[in-house]
Image (cartoon, rainbow, N blue to C red):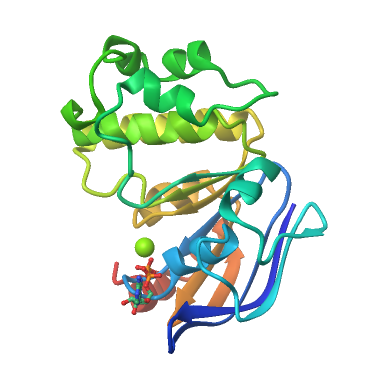
Length: 229
Ligand SMILES: Nc1ncnc2c1ncn2[C@@H]1O[C@H](COP(=O)(O)OP(=O)(O)O)[C@@H](O)[C@H]1O
Ligand SMILES: [Mg+2]
């Protein structure tokens, strides 16, 4: 479904990615692991056309999406839950949800409210009035309402209280069971070992290790060395 080869990009004169290659197959849950500042978010931003690749290829369903504008890439079926949530503070929950909603697909307002009943209770509240956890539920629901074939989550559980975190993981499990393809960046390796099929460890803009959950589990030194766990 997603096939990235030798991707390079950066900001101005400073290169950040030095040849990232990764893939996500239909129905797969794949992670990008690595310490802060290694280039995970930059990879996502390059995939989505927010920053331009300087080399390499990005194929989505076999079609090159490198260089397309972000809204076009979104319309082709990639939904992002961005780092820092980025919900619109002066719109209500419901307005945030419908602003970018797109069919066809299984996700609509009712389905989002079923997934996160809390959002239904808060549907008339402004984005700015939400707690961090509610904002995160909104960010996830907003991405789902674009009915993406590939969902990308960038640090979706960061800075959340443990109970809210559990709720986010419950949602991701549910999506996985439905066969949603997911590319996920998160620091909770223990949970990711359970939920994900494959992993890429990113170090200084390069993939330094890739493998299955089983393989990662059998090399605990990897998590220690590259992830600081
Ligand atoms: N907007 C930006 N302008 C310049 N440098 C940036 C910008 N965003 C990130 N960087 C740099 O790119 C590198 C990778 O950052 P990032 O992709 O955010 O890492 P990660 O998501 O793995 O924590 C870091 O050295 C960071 O300082
Ligand atoms: Mg990041």
